Length: 414
Image 1 (cartoon, rainbow, N blue to C red):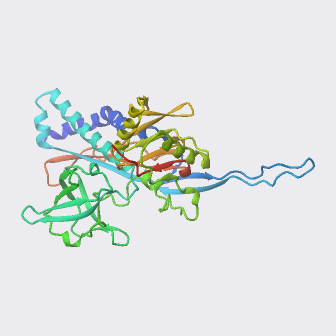
Image 2 (image 1 turned 30 degrees about the horizontal axis):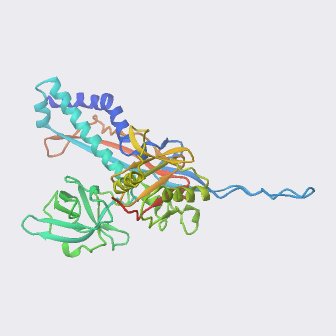
Image 3 (image 1 turned 180 degrees about the horizontal axis):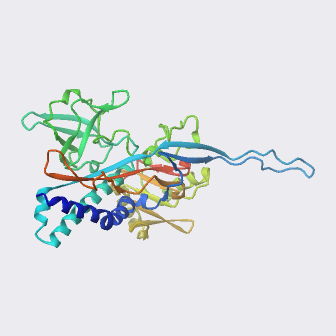
C-alpha cells in the first residue's frame, strides 16, 4: 500500500482547496443561530489576547445652568479594558489504510469517501461549538448525582442531575470525570479519556467505559452532586460562552463583578408562565438601565412550545422570520420591530435569553484551518494503519456590555 502516500497527497490538496471553504462556512455560521448573528472581529485580537473596551455609565459635564452661570464640570465617559486569552479549538479526523484501499475502485468512491470524512468533521465541530458557545468556559457537560459500577463489563453508569440537558452527551464522545473538591478542579484519578457508550434521556443516565485501558472501579471516589463530566482535555479551556457572561457570581474576562457591578446581567429566575408581558418586562429592564436595544432572543425547546401554546390560547399564530445563517425564528414584536426568538436544544429547560447582538462578537486570530504538519495535512498514526489530519482555530466569544442583555429562567415549559 505504498501508493497510499500519493493518494494521501491528493486528499490533502482536496481538503485544502475544495472542502475547506464550505467547512469553514458551516462551522462558523451553521453551529449556532446566535453565533451566526455575531460580527467576526480580528482587529481586537492582539497576539494571543483579546482586548476590548467595556463602556459603562454616562458622561458627566451635562446639566442646567443659570443665565450667567458656569458650564458644568466635564467628566469623561467611563470604560474598563478587558483582556483575556483566545481559546484553542481543535478537531481531528482519522482515516484507515483499509478505507483508502476500498475507495480506489472508482473516482466516485474516492470522492464519496472524502466527502463523508469532511462531513463527519463538520458535524462534530458544529455540535461542539454550538454547545460550548452557551457554556461557561469550564467545559462542564453535567453533574453526577449517583454512580453504579458493573464489574463484569467494567463500565460506570452515572445518573446525572437535571441541571444540564443530557443532549450535551452522546454515544462515542470522550469525556473526563472532574473532581470538584480539588483546588482548582482537576481530573479524577482513573477518570480520564472515557468513552460514552450509552445515554438514556428519560432516566438521565450515561454509561462510560475506558477507551485506552479498562476502566477500574472509581465509584467510591466520585462525590455525588459535585463531580462532573467534561469533554476530554477541555477543563477550563472552552469558549467563554453565554453562561459565563450571565453568571453574576463569577468574574468575567478577569474582572470582578463585585468591584464592577455594571458587569451584572439583569434577569428573572422565577418567571412562571410565559407571555408577552413577561418578555416585555425583561426587555424593558435591560434596555432602560443600559441603553441597549434587544434585537435577538433564544429559548429552550420547552419554552418555545409554551409560547406557541400561549399564542394559540389567544387564537393567535406565532409569526416566523428568516435570520442570518439560514435559521428560522419565531417573531416577537417590540415597538413595531420584530425580534427573532430561536429555540436552542442546548439551553436548559425554562430558559430565555435576550441580547443586543451589537454588543457581542466572535474574536478570532484565524479561521478554521487544517494544520500543516510539515509533510502535508495528513500524517501517519504511529503503530496504526491509519492517517490523521487536524483542524485548529484560536478564538473566543465576547460581550462588551453585559448589562444590556438579559437571562430569564424558571419559565413553565410545555
